Length: 194
Image (tube, rainbow, N blue to C red; front, side):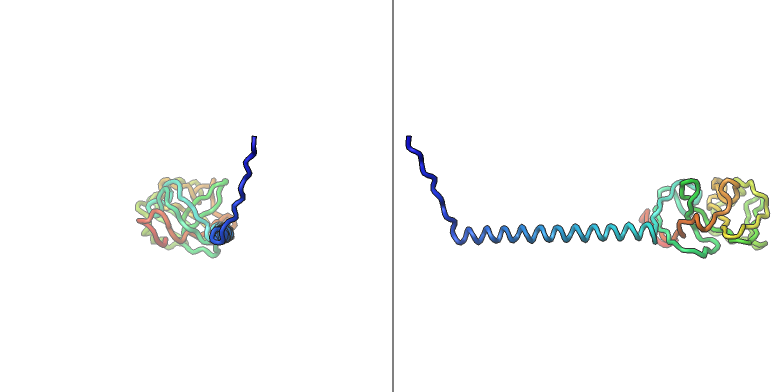
């Protein structure tokens, strides 16, 4: 039996140029892909750092802050200090994050009557954010003086909120505070500054 000789074909110049262009394209594509992935990883890392260190994003659970905030709302908080009355703050309590409103600062006297009217240093608070007033769960002795380095906080839904009126939560130390809630990002219908 005779063996057939395999013929070697020499590519033309056009075929060589096409192959060279294909290889250059693959090289550019890989370089662009690596660059894009690098940029995306860097942006994601920066976003995570900002979200954890400067602007923590929180989701609201429960009804203690209705009508201001409702279950499922997503908000941005700002890490800062020097909180003012009526600021909404998030703080750590028993491995959870609670959200409440600042009512009084260190050294101030808080009093709440049976109808839920709140006074700080004898001056009634103007609370337009409340839909109803209630004494709620209160087992502290009133009037109550806020200890040094602490904040007296209450939820906006006073009848269900467990807050500084309860000895179990008490006043909040500034070290416990995650941040001041400044902006609602979800739902879009309520998007805006708090």
